[in-house]
Length: 386
Image (cartoon, rainbow, N blue to C red; front, side, top):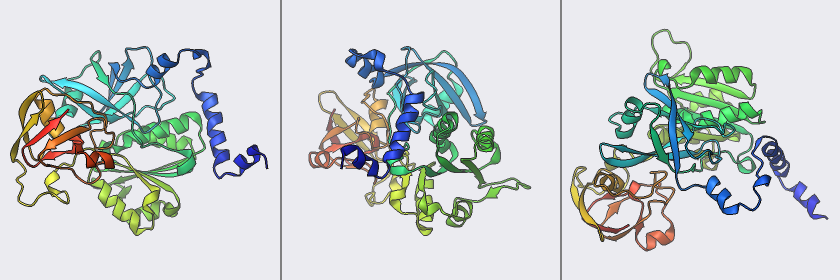
């Protein structure tokens, strides 16, 4: 049998061919760039990007969208669902935060990031209340693994969103509807109040115009007289809204507490873990409540952190080591700030740190004492090498 015939027999091959045709039809044509390999690599995978805020749009009373225009005359392509790590300087402290891109990848003129108020949020308060059009930021290039893979994920998808967790899904839904892609999406969006639902009007309109998009809004704290779905994303509710959910690929993105709750509810209705994709969600709000936190360790205990060859600083047990370093003026590379990307990988010479479950340390790194400061909490005096 010829190789071509064998390829056609592989499950999913025809779907990939269709995806290739979509890319050829709508994607950029790079054939004119022959001979400019390094320049193209730098354009597609830049170490840093520089943006000007061109427009700020209020989505709800607690949420705004910042439109970012490249100062470098180009934007690298990304997969719908990916994020950039936005670098800021506030009060002399340099830090960064990852934000999902809410605009679709077929829109190549700008990136939109949608930011919601976080109680006592150091960066969110600055972005929402102090930033004006014309401000310039740097960021990493797009990254992250929370995107659709047609070969493994199929075209029948369920999106479970909570609060600002709608942002990566908005990029996906905009791409699907803008391009007419043959994917069926059922979005179940949980919000506390109906007036604080991000993108509600646009989501309703896109679902009305595209039969492959279904939009179900669920309000946990409705006002009197509200007639939509209410409560939490329980097994009973999900089974009622999406009767055959166990046969679909489920994507989950929202507040920290949403993950363990929804994973338990999905398990009740027979959704296998391998059919659930979750977005990274940053450091826990209360690390002392995490399994394995040392018994008797005070949350506000303070320890010395010696940065070999530089200086010694103070760090608190209940905040990530990266925060203490940034407060002291020591900025290390970062992208996800969730223990996944490994950019902040640092060697722990002595002492102990606590790292919550979910931090993805390579086996060799664990063997030789490397940690991820974005999700490492000092529980003794330590020494590190950057």
